[in-house]
Amino acid sequence: MSVESVSKSVSKVAIVTGSGRGIGRTIALKLAERNISVVINDVGDPAPAHEVVAQITSLGGKAMHAMADISKADEVEGLINATLSAWQRIDILVNNAGITRDQLLMRMSDEDWDRVMTINVKGAFLCTRAAIRPMMRQRWGRIVNISSVAGIIGNAGQANYSASKAGLIGLTKTTAREVASRGITANAVAPGLIESDMTRKLPDNIKAELIKQVPLGYMGTADDVASAVAFLCSEEARYITGQVIKVDGGLVMA
Image (cartoon, rainbow, N blue to C red; front, side, top):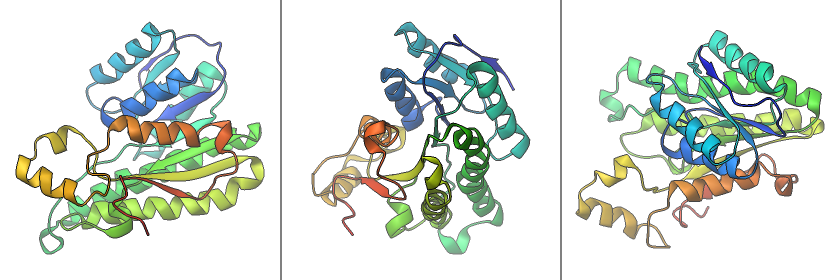
């Protein structure tokens, strides 16, 4: 594990998994804007994570990079220990890291099913199990799991992804019940059609058809998701737990 840290004088501390890019990166930046010190976690090429750290610190915030594969218990423990060593506390955990391996159910391989479930569900479980220990001692904590509307209504070609995101919702509700007495909340955010590298590559006609399904009539942004996460991590959301907040322009209203 590599750790790049900035300053030990902090208030609240957040770990955001998969925060080197995409929605995770935007969440990390949004939390940093609120004077929360952020642990940037990712795997693979460390350059994007270092860029996020640099961006946060250039704006006067506090950030560190802790590389860890969240599907491995020993690396998750290393992530938690590195955070505690640097800043002595963990207040917020955002389980954002996730992958897709899309294929029709009848053609989906065991490997693609297992890999998605391992990263998306087991990874969140391992991080939550490790992070709630210091949160319980503090008697304060916020856990936010990034699910998806696919976990609520399903999506053709994404049996593994949809199942994993539904699993995150179950994990969220159980966690909320188990840790509520210690002042810890657990909620899920379920994004819908969000502007991303993937959606930007879609042909215009397909993109237009997808947008027609959204009552508000346009795609959301990573910032829309990050704003919901930041609210759930705040003191203002202290009486909200075990909930699934859909950020989808009205796509799913049930």
